[in-house]
Length: 509
Ligand code: FAD
Ligand code: DLZ
Ligand code: SF4
Image (cartoon, rainbow, N blue to C red; front, side, top):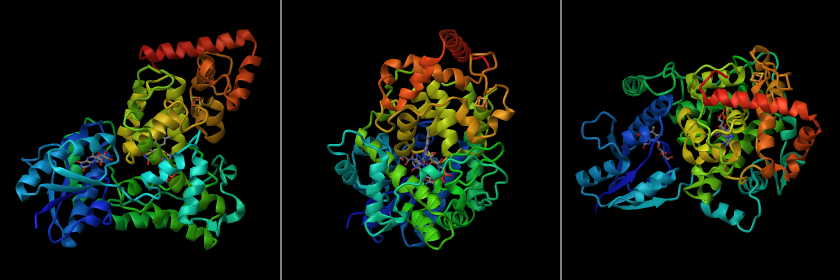
């Protein structure tokens, strides 16, 4: 029998991933490759490269222990061709293989690259998700608007998670209403941390030598790099943080980087944890009476709701989705996103922790860095490339819909029914950043020290009136703007223009 190659990518580290399930241990060779091209399509955070290489190496060792023949290319191997197709061709030659079994990658770029190789590559659907491509298409067919909430209910019914028969447990599908408390007092938990073992240390040295110019701090590195560790981190989260996850899901706090968030996205996205296993652990804790329903439901909704939904949108919308720019925004991404100086305390805090940890939680991504970029009219493609680079959990299928769609409204409202914009009020309500800021969040009339979110918020609404003026969900905002006296409106717009000019001229904002 002719040998086949079985491709396993750096975010497909699951023993039951489609290509491995279909493969034959006695006949096939697993190909795993650290390659320059994958490290360079954006300038990934060093921690992200380290996580992927370390987890790949440990996964390859586990497959070998399990009896698989694994052809593993390290980045520094002298004959490494530097690309996934290149490594497949090299291994095909080495093993006289003509055929490749692959699991469909999570990025259109790589799907096309596999299709373009002269080898016969079969791309099997990645079924580590609740919804198949067909499920999503069937759901989307004939709908005017593809709203997450209705899709989420389908996923609840399909999985039976938090269901009592045909009805949602507790009689409500969604407990978000209870989930908007600002944090106060002590944060009594933190994600589990892992001391690097020998494999991880070797990778850290490699990444230090090769990627020290990339944005981000490599050490300390404490992420889970195998399934055993990731499961311990999951159990730790369920016991210590999940009970308060719901209440404080939208909160931000000075010096508190994780609050009651799970910090599990990277483990789930690279395949160390099965999303349903994660949801089941949360549901079991609720059924055992250890966590409240708003926490369990809110957490499960993020995974079988949002995570599944954004993946559906990415594949439904096609390869041009990350390049969309529905609002025609063109401004360059300000330098402070890469660690340059800013006086805006909320942005400074989110960027500093992103640099140190390759992590920020959802509200920091959406309502601080995302909100500012949208208000300031930054080119959404640059924003997309930033998020894809700097977060440890960033792969295009999940990052692009969140950034281009949810955060920047560049898909013209496929994901969000109105843009996620807010003035400084929201940040002040949900965090204590404003108390430590050079700007005054209560200055709302265009004063010199007025919070830039305050003035840019009105500037955004004013300059996009044509697009959003008729949006019923924004009617209140426009009414408030129209009720202000003209002099105040002009002062606000002038202050916003001053801020935008400073951004364009590279001055500190
Ligand atoms: P928790 O708050 O504990 O949530 C639990 C889990 O739910 C997460 O681990 C994740 O698997 C899932 N989840 C939550 N929200 C989302 C969402 N909106 N989309 C998909 N899954 C979700 N998430 C990524 O996994 N990769 C990305 O590249 C990414 N980019 C983002 C970019 C922007 C602009 C925004 C606004 C959000 C982005 N998110 C992304 C979603 C979300 O911010 C992260 O999943 C979350 O912050 C990860 O931290 P956590 O594990 O502590 O999540
Ligand atoms: C992100 C990443 C990086 C940095 N390096 C590799 C690599 O060397 N080899 C590999 O197989 N995968 C890597 N990845 C993950 C891929 O970029 C990812 O599989 C695609 O973007 C599709 O999600
Ligand atoms: Fe951010 Fe404005 Fe508050 Fe400063 S005053 S922390 S810029 S919201």
